[in-house]
Image (cartoon, rainbow, N blue to C red; front, side, top):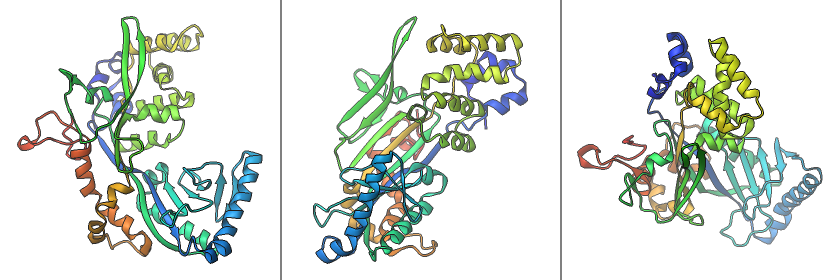
Length: 406
């Protein structure tokens, strides 16, 4: 554990005792936190699409969902459906019905099947469960939940297959996507990719010295592609401004990605759903924990002054308080087509047989997850990587598997 060099150059750091510096600012520098951030998988119902099964067994389930959604539309509230699942007003493509286990997974069902290769059900495993409960636990729990739901209508699961898997890496060693996408002579200095499409989003900051453009979201790959896309973006900004996934602050702190100071300020800004509130958050931190009574009073007055803009508060904070630690997310979104061409290979892949009672229908997905290092090696070297030409033996060092970061 250590303290960022930028933090040690601030007035607030100099003011504190050794013990308080350690308490407020320690973290693990150049920390990489990898995980699977999103999984969609499809479920086919045995006999679905045939008149006998569809009319006699599937239709009663769909009718029940339809009635519950009509009630939800009238009340604008989720409806308790069955087996602890709530019917919400969410939808996914043409999957009009959504049963949810709050914050853990969503089960989407469609009214009619356009063809026999279309699954009746798509399940989304959400970030909270994947990060805090584990991929294996949430995958199995969601499958068993669907199995029980279908059993109530005398239906069985025929097969499952992957639909989308997102692999991500949270980093605290890069200050912004700008650093990764630097240009030199009209060319990207560090970027290597086999993707062709490029999408960029950024913010414009108006300062006394002029305008600063910040790149905060870069996406590579075609949006409608059924293969693979890659994204690099400011994860702190996303969590704060989207107003969800605040569990990341505690998780990042627990894993050493951010400090106590960072966590406190991020949670403050989260309440306002505006990343620019990280500036007043830094002043508020001093009001709460600072040792100079005069400075506490001055910052408190600034915070309560309606004539002070967020830009004004940022200038005040930058003069004495450390900036918060950035957390950048590098994410690889892989879809069904990405795995489709390696079907035979996946069937031969080994699986971790130490797990108890793996449902036969989930074994293909487990084979992908248990051998994900093979896919990650490709993604982090060919799909999107960053290196500075100083890799081992002259080879490019990939971000983030080999951690050859700038």
